[in-house]
Image 1: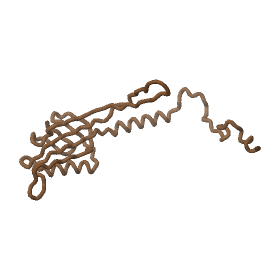
Image 2: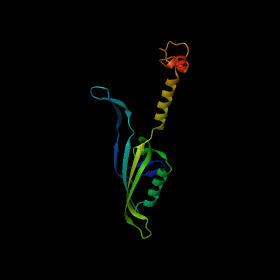
Image 3: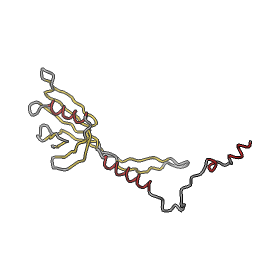
Image 4: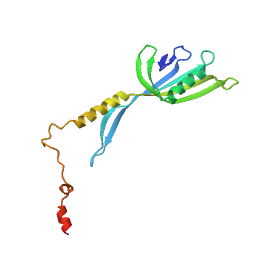
Length: 170
C-alpha cells in the first residue's frame, strides 16, 4: 500500500505504511426536555481520523529525512491532499500527532531504523465556510411571514410593565 501525502511520496514497498486505521463518526446533540427522555438530534458528519504506521530503515531510505519532512508539515500547519496507490483522492488532512520509535541508531545518533505513527485529521474548511455563509445569508433575508412594515424601535418604557413617568412621581 503506497500513498502520497502532500509533497512526500511513499512509493516503495519498504517505506509504505505497514498499517492504516481510520475512524469516522457523526455528531449528535442530546436535547433534554423538561419531562420525559432526552431527544437525540443528528447534527452531521464528523471528520475522519486516520492513523498510519510506517517503518523506515537506512537500507532502503533515509529515516531522518522522512521524519523531518513529516515534522515540518505538522509544524507549519500544512493541510495536504492524501492519495492512495490507486490514485484515489482520500481528502485533505492535517497532521495532528507524530510518534517516532527509533529502534536502531547510527553512532552519531541519527535513526537507522524507526517506526513512525502519524495521526491525520480530515480538513474541510470549505464545507465549514459554505455552511457559515449560508447561515449568514439566511439570517440577513427578511422573513416572508413577517407582516410588520417597519422594524419597531421604542423607548425603554415600551419594554417595561410600568410607565417610567409613574416611577418618577413616586
